[in-house]
Image 1 (tube, rainbow, N blue to C red):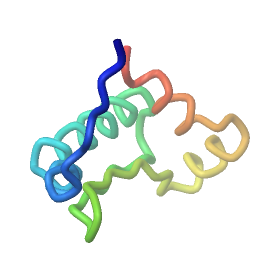
Image 2: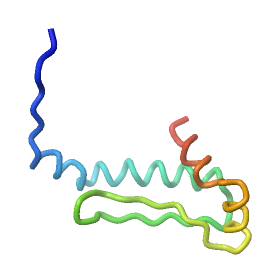
Image 3: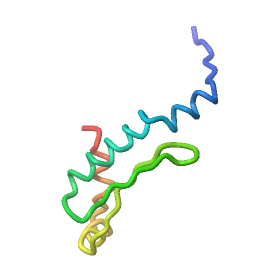
Length: 81
């Protein structure tokens, strides 16, 4: 038997902006960065709607490597390992 679940929108909004959500985002970003080497930077913040983390290529060599091989996407994709 399937039961209907009703989410509390206020609670979901709070969860998306919570310290715990931010920590999960940071963990994924730093895990990806550790696979990339130098030239990549992690930034994170609590936005208006949710917690965010970003991995960016900041050096010229890292930018070229990422454009050629899509290294950030590959590193983030394997962060759950």
